[in-house]
Length: 74
Image (cartoon, rainbow, N blue to C red; front, top):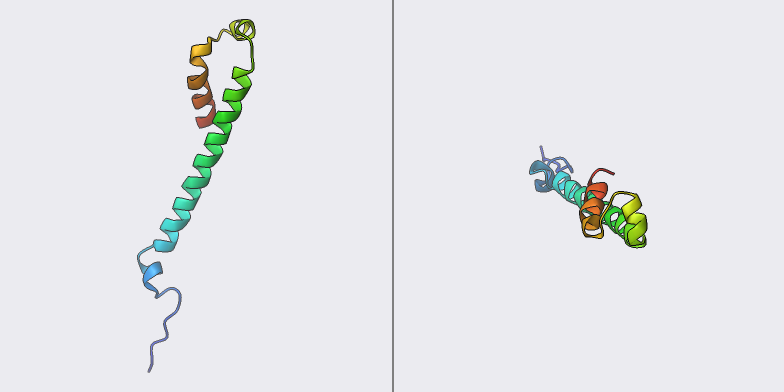
């Protein structure tokens, strides 16, 4: 009896290559989304005047850190 190779028997499936590639693609998509969120917050805060930042209790030097944190917790 001849053994038919199915997609589940392929070496790619046996070693989880498909799942690993899907995971990689998902991580890349997450990183892109996080970077876009970071840039969005960064641009918005940079557009504020020093007075507006002070009203919010922020300093211009802390904008990058705030944008990073906002992007991570989106």
